[in-house]
Length: 396
Image (cartoon, rainbow, N blue to C red; front, side):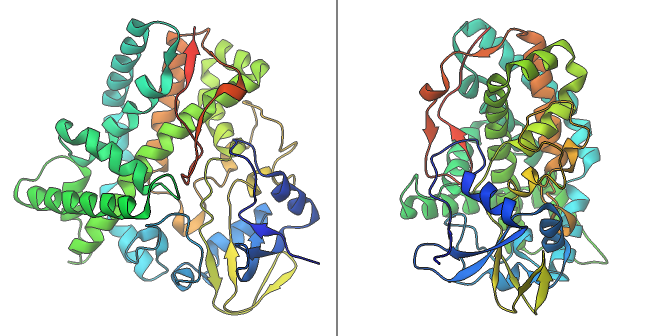
């Protein structure tokens, strides 16, 4: 019997792959072929099994960074990126980064985020309905926020946005163009770092440059690649998950109405959007460094384990009626979209803050907001790691 081949050949959609859900119904771990004609490996589908992989040091990110391992994007295998490291190197880099990228810093920025949101919504209102909520609001919001957080001048925001999209590409752009964008961004960040060494500011770049742990700090290479990661993830995640959330709410009008009537549900609704929506194709592969039992299967040393978080988010052992979208779900915040354990997303607090403020503000300003075109007229960007719309026409 032939093995299922991943990634699954399914249309661009916010829905979790039916083939993955069918495999989940059979068990928490499935034997698969990684790419047509590629090597065999394992796909982790169950919630408990996924959390085990995310926390068990016998599943190594570093060991999976080989030429044979499939990559979520052209630039996904940089060795100094905190997400690609194991302890003790991961512990060291993350500790230094956490000194700069703190929840307190994000909370202090919240009034400024709200100010940016209000100004962008003024632009949407001035434009009039129908309006592209993605182009006028969802796209400029996070790029403005992350650039301010990093100390990037306003005049550089447009090219930073262009670099960010290209670095999230799988096939949307030629490989040469993606690599050129990475070179340009890294050169820019190298210059920004040197500027902040000479002229410190109240920003994350300065804080990362100055971060010390018993005299140890991040090297220039570590600073550049991890600033790149913070920037790209901090922009693209929020842009697209906000737009995807509006589409998902529109597909569930009774839930949308419930949220409109009670905006205090917004934080939980954001968690449910993060749980329910298939956002990314990134599987964060790991390799077993020794034989490990996982979900009733024996994973042999050296075998590759693929971990798509959106599938465990639909595990009925973790979430009651997991295929139902429910903005009041009591444990929606248990989703694994930001992963879990040592590699839990450093930018999760920033993303949540932006998404919650944005969703509440949009619905407060436009309580009758609705997507202005049918589902089948929404145009998706193919060839990115993330599920991304080209535009989001709305009326109110």
